[in-house]
Amino acid sequence: MTIPDLLSRSELFCELPAVVLNDIAGICREVKVSKGEVIFRIGDLSKDVFILAEGSVELGYGLISADESKPGTIREPGEFFGWGALAGEGNYRLINALAVQETRLIIVDGVELMNLLEGQPAAGFRFIRKLLAIILNRIVAMAAT
Image (tube, rainbow, N blue to C red; front, top):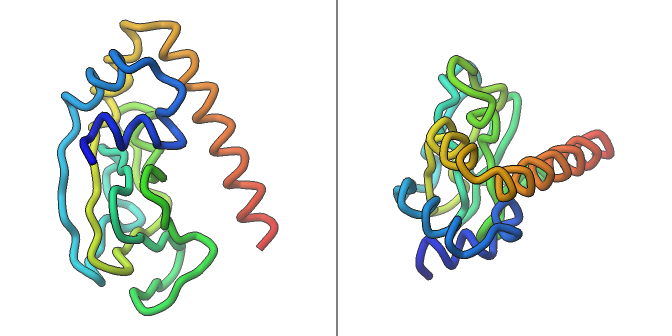
């Protein structure tokens, strides 16, 4: 699956036009992460947003393990995490992220993404509206566990 295809299936990017998805794909990079590898820790600089292509990632506040799966696990291709990077420079991670299995991630610089969307107001508005809905749903889901 190409990066634009994955973005088009992502909960965060699915409502954006193909031309915008292609622009976003141009600022993405792909990485492979081994099982048990830390992607980021609480207190790390929050620079990038991550989109799951394959594998799974555990998110948690305390000690997390690659051997267990919890409600905070990112499992579905297209799911994203690390959204704090979209708030601008100088933000820090508020959660830990660990690869639960061999994982492939698409990474996009949060500031670059927001700058790109700033030049396309209609797409940027759709993106922010979708982002807020996702964040709200995740907070409600976490509060219910």
